[in-house]
Length: 209
Image 1 (spheres, helix red, strand yellow):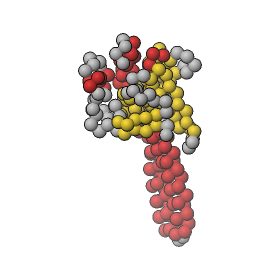
Image 2 (cartoon, helix red, strand yellow):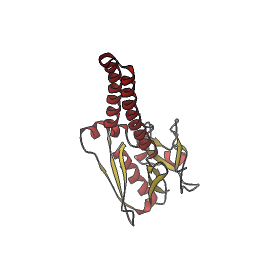
Image 3 (cartoon, helix red, strand yellow):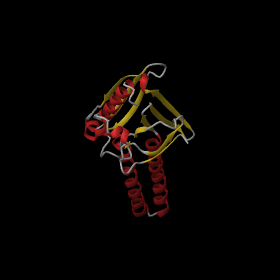
Image 4 (cartoon, helix red, strand yellow):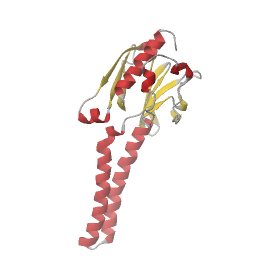
């Protein structure tokens, strides 16, 4: 399996980190959701070391898929209206059912593709590295990672009213080597994620993790 995790419903921060006087600890408290999971339980991914601690797992914020959500809702309504109108004005239930099924299947396909894109594309921050996992197709994925000591710069970008309203944005992790940049696309709490990474870099350089 490329990646698996269980949400930490108790949000228990390991004692090692809870005693640290760093601002990133506050960012990890009280914000647990499916798009922002601090210290998730039983998290694993390809290449993870046994003693490696997963700090945070993020996914794209649902607001990033607002257009797809609205499109699916519109298509479902259109399917129902098509069924009713065809039955009433064309006098054919079969034509109405055919239109309903065609439009509904299109809506279902968009909904499934959007869900899979959201669920299987994850960003992982550990005490050793950052990992960006992207599922390209059903059996094809791309995983890009960088060790913390290879990170050179971290920036965030929030564009537009919706991004600021939903507090979503993209975090760019500039690294040394062949993988020039890792992107955490349209995630929740981008500024907090930037601060978390900055604090982890300081801890790594100081030999505390």
